[in-house]
Image (cartoon, rainbow over all chains, first blue to last red; front, side):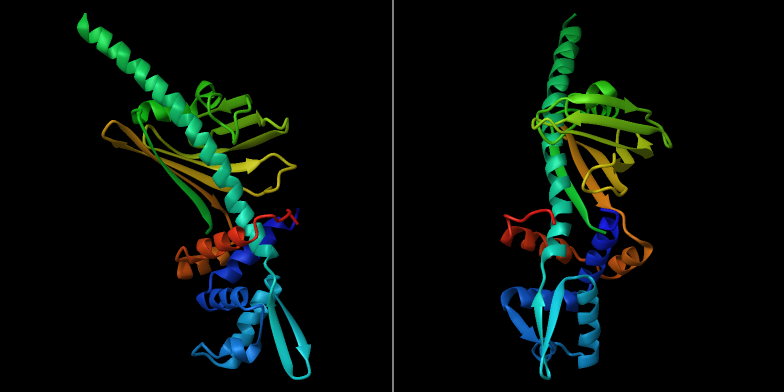
Length: 122
Length: 150
Protein backbone atom coordinates (compact mmCIF):
# COMPACT_ATOMS: atom_id res chain seq x y z
CA UNK A 1 0.00 0.00 0.00
CA UNK A 2 2.80 2.39 0.93
CA UNK A 3 4.55 1.59 -2.31
CA UNK A 4 1.43 1.91 -4.43
CA UNK A 5 2.37 5.37 -5.72
CA UNK A 6 5.93 4.33 -6.43
CA UNK A 7 4.75 1.25 -8.32
CA UNK A 8 2.16 3.16 -10.32
CA UNK A 9 4.71 5.85 -11.03
CA UNK A 10 7.22 3.31 -12.29
CA UNK A 11 4.64 1.57 -14.46
CA UNK A 12 3.60 4.77 -16.20
CA UNK A 13 7.21 5.90 -16.57
CA UNK A 14 8.06 2.59 -18.24
CA UNK A 15 5.04 2.79 -20.53
CA UNK A 16 5.64 6.32 -21.74
CA UNK A 17 8.30 5.32 -24.27
CA UNK A 18 6.98 4.18 -27.70
CA UNK A 19 9.69 1.54 -28.17
CA UNK A 20 8.84 -0.01 -24.82
CA UNK A 21 5.15 0.07 -25.62
CA UNK A 22 5.84 -1.66 -28.93
CA UNK A 23 7.83 -4.35 -27.12
CA UNK A 24 4.97 -4.93 -24.67
CA UNK A 25 2.39 -4.99 -27.44
CA UNK A 26 4.41 -7.64 -29.23
CA UNK A 27 4.82 -9.73 -26.09
CA UNK A 28 1.09 -9.54 -25.60
CA UNK A 29 0.53 -10.99 -29.09
CA UNK A 30 3.25 -13.62 -28.92
CA UNK A 31 3.62 -15.57 -25.74
CA UNK A 32 7.38 -15.08 -25.54
CA UNK A 33 10.26 -13.73 -27.61
CA UNK A 34 14.03 -13.74 -27.47
CA UNK A 35 15.94 -10.49 -27.06
CA UNK A 36 17.26 -10.60 -30.63
CA UNK A 37 13.75 -11.24 -31.99
CA UNK A 38 12.51 -8.23 -30.06
CA UNK A 39 15.34 -6.05 -31.33
CA UNK A 40 14.83 -6.93 -35.01
CA UNK A 41 11.96 -4.52 -35.92
CA UNK A 42 13.67 -1.50 -34.36
CA UNK A 43 16.27 0.74 -35.96
CA UNK A 44 18.28 0.74 -32.75
CA UNK A 45 21.20 -1.34 -31.57
CA UNK A 46 20.91 -4.32 -29.30
CA UNK A 47 22.37 -2.53 -26.22
CA UNK A 48 19.65 0.13 -26.54
CA UNK A 49 17.01 -2.59 -26.63
CA UNK A 50 18.62 -4.17 -23.57
CA UNK A 51 18.29 -0.85 -21.75
CA UNK A 52 14.59 -0.69 -22.56
CA UNK A 53 14.21 -4.25 -21.31
CA UNK A 54 15.96 -3.26 -18.07
CA UNK A 55 13.43 -0.48 -17.51
CA UNK A 56 10.54 -2.84 -18.24
CA UNK A 57 12.07 -5.45 -15.96
CA UNK A 58 12.51 -2.98 -13.08
CA UNK A 59 8.88 -1.93 -13.46
CA UNK A 60 7.90 -5.60 -13.21
CA UNK A 61 6.33 -5.56 -16.66
CA UNK A 62 8.44 -8.38 -18.12
CA UNK A 63 10.31 -11.43 -16.92
CA UNK A 64 13.53 -12.71 -18.49
CA UNK A 65 14.79 -16.27 -18.38
CA UNK A 66 18.12 -17.44 -19.68
CA UNK A 67 18.68 -20.77 -21.34
CA UNK A 68 22.19 -21.21 -22.67
CA UNK A 69 22.91 -18.09 -24.70
CA UNK A 70 19.29 -17.26 -25.34
CA UNK A 71 17.31 -14.87 -23.14
CA UNK A 72 13.56 -15.32 -23.42
CA UNK A 73 11.31 -12.40 -22.52
CA UNK A 74 7.74 -12.75 -21.31
CA UNK A 75 5.05 -10.24 -20.43
CA UNK A 76 4.02 -9.74 -16.81
CA UNK A 77 0.80 -7.74 -17.01
CA UNK A 78 0.01 -7.26 -13.29
CA UNK A 79 1.42 -3.70 -13.00
CA UNK A 80 -0.57 -2.68 -16.04
CA UNK A 81 -3.72 -4.05 -14.47
CA UNK A 82 -3.00 -1.93 -11.41
CA UNK A 83 -2.72 1.12 -13.65
CA UNK A 84 -5.92 0.08 -15.42
CA UNK A 85 -7.62 -0.27 -12.04
CA UNK A 86 -6.69 3.29 -11.22
CA UNK A 87 -8.37 4.55 -14.38
CA UNK A 88 -11.36 2.27 -13.98
CA UNK A 89 -12.02 3.20 -10.36
CA UNK A 90 -12.24 6.94 -11.01
CA UNK A 91 -14.15 6.45 -14.23
CA UNK A 92 -16.79 4.52 -12.34
CA UNK A 93 -16.92 7.01 -9.47
CA UNK A 94 -17.34 10.06 -11.69
CA UNK A 95 -19.52 8.49 -14.34
CA UNK A 96 -22.25 7.60 -11.83
CA UNK A 97 -21.79 10.82 -9.86
CA UNK A 98 -22.12 12.98 -12.98
CA UNK A 99 -25.24 11.09 -14.08
CA UNK A 100 -26.81 11.86 -10.72
CA UNK A 101 -25.57 15.46 -10.88
CA UNK A 102 -27.23 15.89 -14.29
CA UNK A 103 -30.55 14.52 -13.01
CA UNK A 104 -30.43 16.83 -9.99
CA UNK A 105 -29.50 20.07 -11.79
CA UNK A 106 -31.87 19.43 -14.70
CA UNK A 107 -34.75 19.23 -12.22
CA UNK A 108 -33.51 22.47 -10.62
CA UNK A 109 -33.26 24.15 -14.01
CA UNK A 110 -36.81 23.09 -14.87
CA UNK A 111 -38.06 24.48 -11.54
CA UNK A 112 -36.24 27.79 -12.09
CA UNK A 113 -37.63 28.07 -15.63
CA UNK A 114 -41.17 27.37 -14.45
CA UNK A 115 -40.77 30.07 -11.83
CA UNK A 116 -39.32 32.55 -14.34
CA UNK A 117 -42.20 31.82 -16.72
CA UNK A 118 -44.72 32.39 -13.91
CA UNK A 119 -43.12 35.68 -13.00
CA UNK A 120 -43.06 36.75 -16.65
CA UNK A 121 -46.84 36.35 -16.86
CA UNK A 122 -47.56 38.61 -13.92
CA UNK B 1 0.20 12.03 -16.57
CA UNK B 2 -2.62 9.54 -16.63
CA UNK B 3 -6.10 10.80 -16.29
CA UNK B 4 -9.78 10.07 -16.58
CA UNK B 5 -11.76 12.61 -18.60
CA UNK B 6 -15.55 12.64 -18.81
CA UNK B 7 -17.74 15.04 -20.77
CA UNK B 8 -21.46 15.54 -20.10
CA UNK B 9 -24.00 17.77 -21.80
CA UNK B 10 -26.45 18.87 -19.16
CA UNK B 11 -29.76 20.70 -19.62
CA UNK B 12 -29.11 23.26 -16.90
CA UNK B 13 -27.36 26.63 -16.93
CA UNK B 14 -23.73 26.77 -15.68
CA UNK B 15 -24.61 28.76 -12.52
CA UNK B 16 -26.99 26.01 -11.37
CA UNK B 17 -24.41 23.30 -12.13
CA UNK B 18 -21.67 25.22 -10.33
CA UNK B 19 -23.85 25.62 -7.25
CA UNK B 20 -24.61 21.89 -7.21
CA UNK B 21 -20.87 21.16 -7.44
CA UNK B 22 -19.86 23.42 -4.59
CA UNK B 23 -22.60 23.53 -1.94
CA UNK B 24 -23.11 20.89 0.75
CA UNK B 25 -26.79 20.66 -0.17
CA UNK B 26 -25.98 20.14 -3.83
CA UNK B 27 -23.23 17.58 -3.21
CA UNK B 28 -25.57 15.54 -1.00
CA UNK B 29 -27.72 14.88 -4.09
CA UNK B 30 -25.19 13.36 -6.43
CA UNK B 31 -21.76 12.48 -4.94
CA UNK B 32 -20.83 8.80 -5.03
CA UNK B 33 -20.45 5.82 -7.36
CA UNK B 34 -23.86 4.31 -6.62
CA UNK B 35 -27.21 5.38 -5.13
CA UNK B 36 -25.94 5.25 -1.52
CA UNK B 37 -26.30 8.35 0.69
CA UNK B 38 -23.89 11.20 1.35
CA UNK B 39 -23.25 11.31 5.11
CA UNK B 40 -21.08 14.41 5.44
CA UNK B 41 -20.56 17.25 2.98
CA UNK B 42 -18.49 20.29 3.92
CA UNK B 43 -17.22 22.93 1.53
CA UNK B 44 -15.28 26.15 1.94
CA UNK B 45 -15.33 27.35 -1.64
CA UNK B 46 -12.39 29.69 -2.05
CA UNK B 47 -8.80 29.15 -3.13
CA UNK B 48 -7.10 27.46 -0.19
CA UNK B 49 -10.44 26.41 1.31
CA UNK B 50 -11.18 22.72 1.79
CA UNK B 51 -13.91 20.22 1.04
CA UNK B 52 -14.72 16.97 2.78
CA UNK B 53 -17.32 14.44 1.66
CA UNK B 54 -18.21 11.10 3.24
CA UNK B 55 -20.62 8.69 1.58
CA UNK B 56 -21.96 5.20 2.13
CA UNK B 57 -22.24 2.77 -0.75
CA UNK B 58 -25.09 0.30 -1.18
CA UNK B 59 -22.78 -2.49 0.02
CA UNK B 60 -22.53 -0.67 3.36
CA UNK B 61 -18.92 0.50 2.96
CA UNK B 62 -18.15 4.12 3.81
CA UNK B 63 -15.64 6.27 1.97
CA UNK B 64 -14.37 9.76 2.54
CA UNK B 65 -12.40 12.10 0.35
CA UNK B 66 -11.15 15.58 1.02
CA UNK B 67 -8.99 18.18 -0.63
CA UNK B 68 -8.24 21.80 -1.20
CA UNK B 69 -9.76 24.16 -3.74
CA UNK B 70 -6.96 25.25 -6.05
CA UNK B 71 -8.96 27.38 -8.46
CA UNK B 72 -12.49 28.72 -8.05
CA UNK B 73 -14.01 30.61 -10.98
CA UNK B 74 -17.77 30.63 -10.75
CA UNK B 75 -19.49 29.49 -12.88
CA UNK B 76 -16.85 28.15 -15.27
CA UNK B 77 -14.03 26.34 -13.50
CA UNK B 78 -13.34 24.43 -10.30
CA UNK B 79 -10.00 22.78 -9.54
CA UNK B 80 -9.31 20.80 -6.40
CA UNK B 81 -6.78 18.44 -4.93
CA UNK B 82 -8.19 15.06 -3.93
CA UNK B 83 -7.21 12.46 -1.39
CA UNK B 84 -9.10 9.51 0.04
CA UNK B 85 -9.09 9.01 3.76
CA UNK B 86 -6.81 6.13 4.78
CA UNK B 87 -7.89 2.61 3.96
CA UNK B 88 -8.62 3.22 0.30
CA UNK B 89 -6.79 1.59 -2.57
CA UNK B 90 -5.36 4.88 -3.81
CA UNK B 91 -3.84 6.73 -0.83
CA UNK B 92 -2.19 9.39 -2.98
CA UNK B 93 -3.14 12.91 -3.77
CA UNK B 94 -4.69 13.48 -7.17
CA UNK B 95 -6.24 16.46 -8.93
CA UNK B 96 -9.75 17.14 -10.18
CA UNK B 97 -10.61 19.86 -12.68
CA UNK B 98 -14.16 20.65 -13.74
CA UNK B 99 -14.85 23.06 -16.60
CA UNK B 100 -18.33 24.34 -17.41
CA UNK B 101 -19.00 25.75 -20.88
CA UNK B 102 -22.35 27.33 -21.72
CA UNK B 103 -24.02 25.65 -24.71
CA UNK B 104 -27.47 26.06 -26.25
CA UNK B 105 -29.94 24.80 -23.65
CA UNK B 106 -27.43 24.23 -20.90
CA UNK B 107 -23.87 23.33 -20.00
CA UNK B 108 -21.08 21.17 -21.30
CA UNK B 109 -19.23 19.79 -18.29
CA UNK B 110 -15.70 18.40 -18.67
CA UNK B 111 -14.22 16.63 -15.68
CA UNK B 112 -10.59 15.49 -15.54
CA UNK B 113 -9.24 13.44 -12.65
CA UNK B 114 -5.44 13.17 -12.91
CA UNK B 115 -2.93 11.11 -11.03
CA UNK B 116 0.00 13.11 -9.74
CA UNK B 117 3.39 11.62 -10.33
CA UNK B 118 6.98 12.44 -9.58
CA UNK B 119 8.71 15.25 -11.44
CA UNK B 120 10.70 12.75 -13.47
CA UNK B 121 7.68 10.83 -14.69
CA UNK B 122 5.85 14.06 -15.43
CA UNK B 123 8.72 15.33 -17.56
CA UNK B 124 8.99 12.14 -19.55
CA UNK B 125 5.23 12.19 -20.09
CA UNK B 126 5.39 15.72 -21.41
CA UNK B 127 7.95 14.55 -23.95
CA UNK B 128 6.21 11.39 -24.95
CA UNK B 129 2.57 11.55 -24.02
CA UNK B 130 0.22 10.66 -26.82
CA UNK B 131 -2.75 8.92 -25.28
CA UNK B 132 -1.32 5.65 -26.52
CA UNK B 133 -0.53 4.75 -22.94
CA UNK B 134 -4.17 4.99 -21.93
CA UNK B 135 -5.06 2.79 -24.86
CA UNK B 136 -2.48 0.19 -23.91
CA UNK B 137 -3.55 0.15 -20.27
CA UNK B 138 -7.20 -0.11 -21.24
CA UNK B 139 -6.37 -2.90 -23.62
CA UNK B 140 -4.92 -4.94 -20.78
CA UNK B 141 -7.93 -4.15 -18.69
CA UNK B 142 -10.15 -5.53 -21.43
CA UNK B 143 -8.30 -8.75 -22.05
CA UNK B 144 -8.07 -9.64 -18.36
CA UNK B 145 -11.43 -8.80 -16.86
CA UNK B 146 -11.49 -11.26 -13.95
CA UNK B 147 -8.41 -10.12 -12.10
CA UNK B 148 -7.90 -9.58 -8.42
CA UNK B 149 -6.40 -6.51 -6.79
CA UNK B 150 -2.92 -7.88 -6.19
